[in-house]
Length: 297
Image (cartoon, rainbow, N blue to C red; front, side):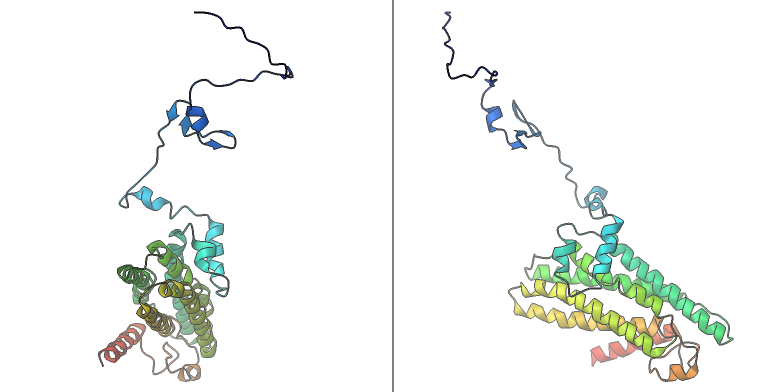
């Protein structure tokens, strides 16, 4: 063992010392974040990264779809009232779609339909000096109709597109579009307490147009991306279903009148004020029977 003389560097300014690592190439090869080694990699090699990978059968898998604040939910709801804005999926849903907002939008709509239709019935009964009756079957109808349309229809559309090879649209995105798209019916259900037929028809028509245009605007680009051009015919089916839901809302929940003349001017008028009216359950049964006979013919 011998000592080697070290000559000083004349070019060194002498302002400080330079420290270097002689531990190998681990440090130089480590990825840096902001000029420092990545926290996932140590000086002696890659450190294990712990991830919370959960299956779809666990609660943790769905937790990310409910991790959303109130401001975001309200923004996504109110933006559906302006369907002419840029793509809703790109601007508001992606890359973080949620299920919290759609679930509570549909649930609030069920509550609004039943409560305000019952309120309208109470007002009509009071002004008509007739006994107040509540049709609790409307609650079951509202639950089935809203959840089937808001959850079942996008599920069926997603499954059909998946079968046809269209993978640009996820199931959570479909539920988000349909759930938030039904938001406009909540204020309409409140305003339809007004016992004026023309006002109710205008409100229902406006809600049908806004929500329908919103759905088609966000669904059609996905349908157009399919190789089979026949998939665009789904638009016709969706419009028919949406029109059927809007008409059902009008017949079952928005048809209470105080004055007989007002009811007589509305061909679909039902309620205590119409002498030729039928009950809500009878109207629903009649509507379903007519639709079934039309489809069979």
